[in-house]
Image (cartoon, rainbow, N blue to C red; front, top):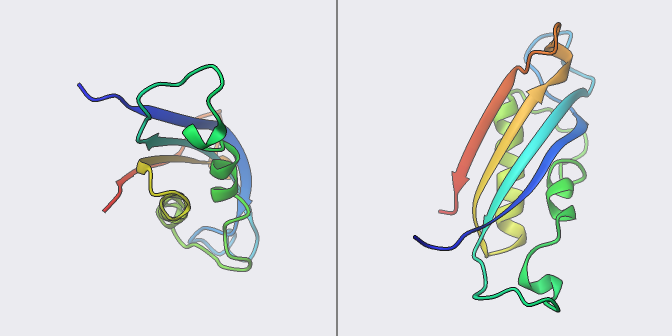
Length: 123
């Protein structure tokens, strides 16, 4: 079995312009992101390994927040997830696969989690 390195950002919340219903359009709505990113690992991680041996976790937060183009409305949260994946692939050629789970917080009534999970491999 091949080695793998998975970095994860869990339960990050950010407001995004998304939705298909009239009450959703024109205003950001809160989304909860969990992002898992597979990287090509190096052979060994010594105690003094530098950040170059892995990836800055803040890149995942950036992809799920500041990387969204200002004023762009994403009709589907699938499009939001796709944008996060593409942002992470563009940042670093070592990223092999990305999984983005998005929960629409505005839709919950009894703490249920309504959303999607998109998994993309580098093409």
